[in-house]
Image 1 (cartoon, rainbow, N blue to C red):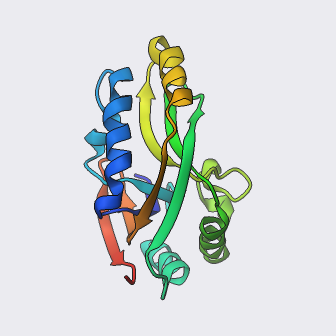
Image 2: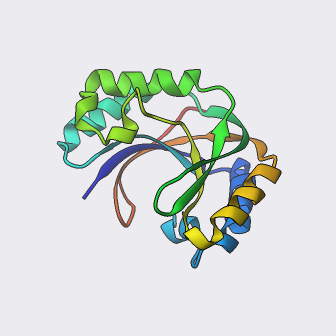
Length: 175
């Protein structure tokens, strides 16, 4: 069962992403993001197998004394997987990359999923993750026509196990 270090948005700034989830779910057979029962988030690292103390230590070092993080988003990107994935694109990733670097300084990046490694990681906030081939073109047209400009305030760091998502450690960031 995989583990991850995740930054989530639990306040009212999440509304634009929740609206995008609802809009994009029309391209899916079932709403993928609502099914997670988890708020909008950014995933910094995913590990298939890791000692929990190492995961907790990395998260603590990356976020110790860190206040809530406001991230501005502009536009919708996609991953062309078997099922199309749509995601909101941060406009500036320097703070996010700095945090990820601290995590990978603590845990060898070779131990994490290849898409979470520093040279492959695309910072994103997922909007829909199970769009079938038949809805792909329409979903991409919608994504291209949707401005998706908003700012989220990420206020909680979680260490999770999934699926389903189980929070094994939660730390609220400073206000």
